[in-house]
Image (cartoon, rainbow, N blue to C red; front, side, top):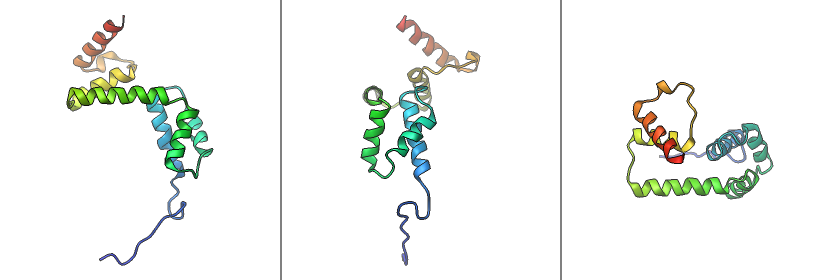
Length: 125
């Protein structure tokens, strides 16, 4: 039986604003890798603290020009959904291709990943 409830309003018990700012910074970094540093996004979040989640998202999308990147990510998500479920390994491999991650030591990559990256690079040439 529940005998009491505690509501945390406006950071009374837990200060979550910093965590929210960092989560938005992570989202920006995923949509536009290398385009903005964490402090820029945290600063942008400070300008909209106190607004609704929707208002914050709209403001940050506009401030950091994330609309096209978000649309592209959604297109990829839909294509993957139509293609059927990925295995965990396929998802990791596709993630490497999507992000075009740079690996300083290619010998550390599994053979299948190296092959897919090479095939992808050949298709772009």
